[in-house]
Length: 86
Image 1 (tube, rainbow, N blue to C red):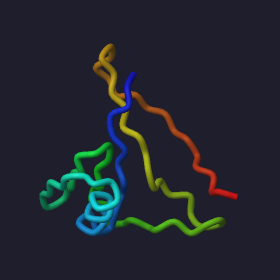
Image 2: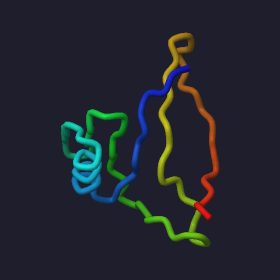
Image 3: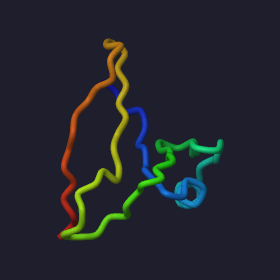
């Protein structure tokens, strides 16, 4: 298994991808519903996105890794629960 990409759910993929491209010095490619920053990440359209509310807000997925494997045609699936800092 190898690390492939980190996908960020975003209500505004253009703003999200512009932020990460600026922060990471990445190149930005965009379509109507998918933005790719050519560093290890890609904001994607999430119309029902709910921003996190720490520490007691809803436990929605905010960031997840997409992993690839050379030995299996099936995607790897595993869940982690995030814990806020502090």
